[in-house]
Amino acid sequence: MPGSRLFAPTGLTIALAVTAVSTASPVQAFSTPGEALTHGYRISNAGAGSVFLAFALSAGAAVATIPVAGTPGSGMYIEGDGEAVFALPHDCYFAAVTPSGTATLYITPGVLL
Image (cartoon, rainbow, N blue to C red; front, side, top):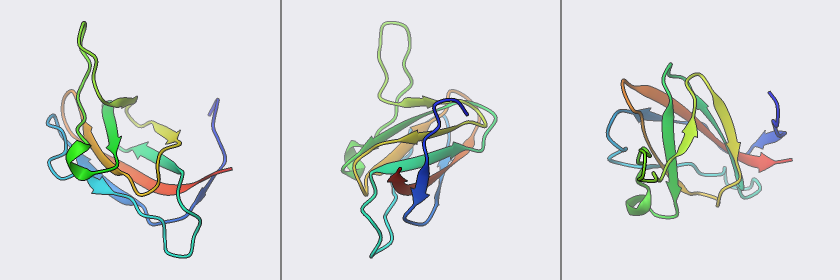
């Protein structure tokens, strides 16, 4: 994958069910105690459709929205069956939304190498 970064997992992978409404209960991805503090996350979209992923330091602030012409959205785009690696604060909360259908995101905390 072009632009891919080396990644070392430091915690358990979590699953986030995604629908056309932003996640009602954002999920938090923790580093395993004793491991290095997470500053990266590998996110894999197991759905066929695209999703928009948002993150925040508190559950209430993690709300994903879809951008439309003239109105920016709060989510980062991940294509269907795609994967992305992001440098984000450790132990952050995630929420996501899809323009249509459903998807499952798999989020693994880790360290970018």
